[in-house]
Image 1 (cartoon, rainbow, N blue to C red):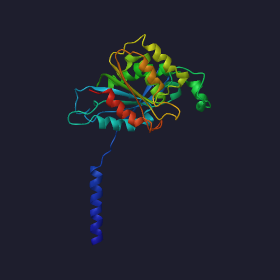
Image 2 (image 1 turned 90 degrees about the vertical axis):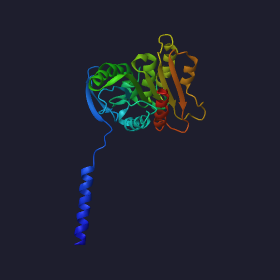
Image 3 (image 1 turned 180 degrees about the vertical axis):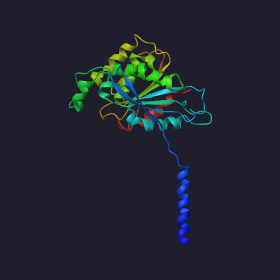
Length: 274
């Protein structure tokens, strides 16, 4: 009798837990066919926790590169930094994570004929590189209109990327600053095409006024014989970019992979300061 009663109580507990359990989702996956890239692209969408409650509210959008790697960690930081009774450090935003198909192609702005020694066996970088403009056209002219149609977005847009993605962020700011309002470039691959970004930064001041754009970029630990500062920081210090507020931070205790989270944390706080 006692064993039967215990079994019955266990069964009730199980049924009670089953009735109250629910799935916890941080986003959904969607697909869009790109005529520009001639392929189907996948993207993830995270909606703020109050999105369904505020039917009249419009939200800023974050465009996040390398979503298959960065989406989970970024949306966690997004939720944490935007919470609070009086508002958080950053606004509540819709996060759109773009999944890779060919990152060598999409995340490099120009082709290169020469690679650093550690990459010289990677022939795909040489063969596929240089498709960055097409990729940006896909984001601006195909993906963004679809998102504007599906969701309540406002005009504010933030662009976030790491490594080759960081290269894309820096390139976009210097070549097409009007595409986004905020730029977060994490340990960007500034070495691409013999420091192509240096040349672009040196020429950008002659063409653009940045009109209240913001940039945060970072680097991971440097080699022992190198300065802790990024060479790209020196270029920015020499230029007078009108209307651009920017900050660089080096993380000497982090490597190329671990630098992502502290860069996102500090970067978001800087980009949305005040």
